[in-house]
Image (cartoon, rainbow, N blue to C red; front, side, top):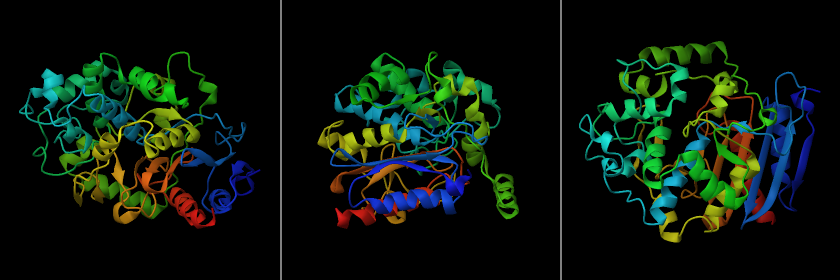
Length: 386
């Protein structure tokens, strides 16, 4: 059985049949290997689909409880930890980071507020190229947070967004750790995933079942795409290289047990599509944050062209906004976060919608993968039929 004939499992509520059709088309027409998609409306699951295989050998079929490393989809869920603390009055997003993490004041960073970490405006999108970082060093929390604390800004803080591709997790995660008195993995488990019954964790614990994990497959690039990527890295400036290539991580890195067990709050959240949709569904229905906290979390920080990835962008505090690209549906105030290669999670409180999407054959984009966009379009196409 190949991708084009993969069996689709699960169910759709009446009226949401276009989502099943789009999900099947991803296997038939867009090279899907294994994937799952879940959507909720007003807190009720209306779509819950899965199909394909957990690895390129096609030895194990995808199951509802298959875990996937979702790359930067993790960022939105890490940001929720900060918003939970802010909602409880324990964290002031306008206070200097150094109030909670004194060492961060080094290198002229004493005045940088917490909100600039969440909106990718801190000026510290990564470690400068004068200190090369190896992939294995990413697993050392104390090392990475100390390097970031000592790092001088690579551009003027607050002046522009520069995607904190790797650094976001340690920056926000260390603030959470300092305020909460426990690591971000533990805080997320106790305050978010646990109460919601969501099968998602920021890195897998030592006793986690690795056999439930899907194997990620690197993107297959055309010759033209490979040349364009090589040219982009060759022409990238020091800010982009610090953010995206120190070190440069690739899809297969996430298959290593050491990666899976580390705490990488920007990169190695593991979970199911159902779990992601459940968490964003709790946001959409007001069950996870108070109304003022949710409004603050998804307030636009301004439209711009990102300094690191060179794409038009509109950040909220830890989330992409739908904006002109409509990446989370037609509501420009819908929000969420995509992960490298296609995974995604998002919420649209005005329409009561949430969704989660996981997959293992990575695409070449960091956001708005065509497979994800087909599912989101089909989800909203279904609403008039409900």
